[in-house]
Image (cartoon, rainbow, N blue to C red; front, top):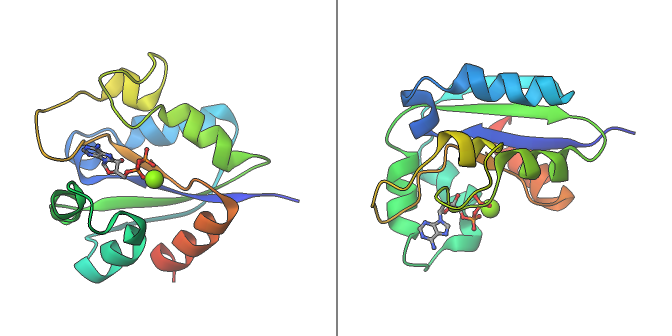
Length: 137
Ligand code: DAT
Ligand code: MG
């Protein structure tokens, strides 16, 4: 029984031309890409996606950043892919994310109000189902 997750290459990753490198890492790890689309996310989608962060100081900058250009949405599958992709992505703060991870190897702090850290990955089975429904409806 396979598990699925939502991965986003955020607007900074797309703008920097890192979509291919990020897809390469997902596939090289052994996960299977079963959905792929590029879109400019609107506020409604982003508000639903990031509902848990509403009211936090980085919320508005986060929504603005995520609306700033195209995002690539990926549905990836595999046993324990949710946990496995979070491990590939690295921790939220790219300055201290471990080398070897997407955020650690390819990301940095740009001194902005929100961390631009290249990727999103669902953090639980419930989030993955909810987020896949939002981005692949
Ligand atoms: P993650 O994307 O690692 O799951 P999250 O869900 O806590 O992290 O936050 C969503 C995004 O918001 C995150 O990728 C970058 C930004 N962010 C989180 N915490 C932040 C903070 N303290 N300062 C600036 N940006 C932050
Ligand atoms: Mg999160």
